[in-house]
Image (cartoon, rainbow, N blue to C red):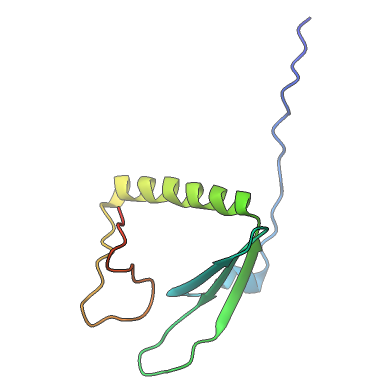
Amino acid sequence: MKENNQPQGQQINIELGEKEAEGIYSNLAIITHSPAEFILDFTRIVPGVPKAKVFARIITTPQHAKMLLRALNDNIEKYEASYGVINVEAPPQQSFGFVPKKDEKVN
């Protein structure tokens, strides 16, 4: 009999509360990091309002941040395969939200 030392897939039940199910709209993320963690602050910018409030803060390890990056990339590729390429070119007058830097290459 051959033993299988591979870990078994663990099933995790995830509970989604009513408030969390509503979600939070964000058009701006501020990302900072230290050697031990990444901090993602999600906010939204509204034209004509000079102040923005952080609606959610996620603190995670560098390893989980990289896994999130890979998962987002995988999902974006699947989305674009189904619905077409996502255009990230911001209108010239837009100076808020998730706007890539001029020299930043985005696929």
